[in-house]
Length: 194
Image (cartoon, rainbow, N blue to C red; front, side):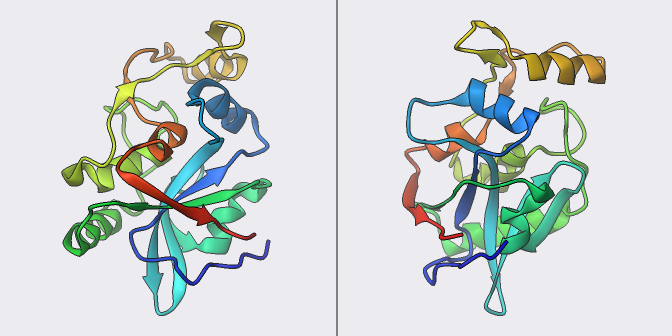
């Protein structure tokens, strides 16, 4: 997939990838809608390296990785609808450097399919939350896996946690891309042209 990176992308920008084709991506979107015009299911952080846009993120099957923008957009060969570019309003360059240092230290960590903070590894929004924890960019909120349209657990989450042999962690603290994109600590810059 071709990807035209806007010239205003900067190291430290946060990219939210749009709705995907796939049961877990649809399940994430279905239970995390904020009422705003966000349908994000994945998130990563930009690092400009020798003029190339690289994105740090935690992805299923890959864990914590740094990939090109094109790889981030076309991750897992799913059809991305949109990628939103956001920038922290008050973050310092020192904080961005520290966040990327932490990203490099976490590179290779496994993906956390449990979405439970105490579990080993990182899920995408947990990873980005952790990178900027010292700046309090994002807040942990009680997680929900309930589909608001049916007022019961989303079928994909029932299957997911049954396969893991775990109870659904309803109400435990966590974060998700839709909630993070709605943070008042971020400015929306625009959508990338894909």
